[in-house]
Picture 1 (cartoon, rainbow, N blue to C red):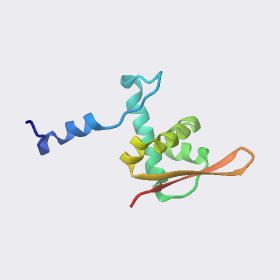
Picture 2: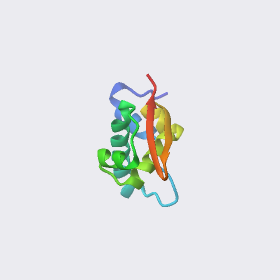
Picture 3: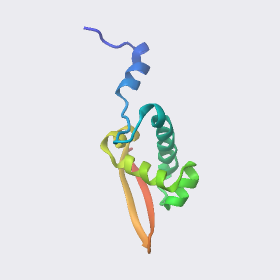
Length: 106
């Protein structure tokens, strides 16, 4: 039996890391960009402060559509586990304006 060593950890992490999906997703073209945006959104939202999509987009240096998509990603179990997300909450403020907040485990 081949058991991974500490030196194999980076390879192990890369091979078991979740990836994005969808009909039009192309790993070579999309993964790095989407993962970077997801990292930025997750880091920005770590303080638990409610934000609009515009505020998230500005803070994470992505588009509003991208920020919305990354929040949806954080709701998916594979990404929630990776980022220790307990919940992604949304609250309608008025008209079409919503506030989003992320609660983290621990």
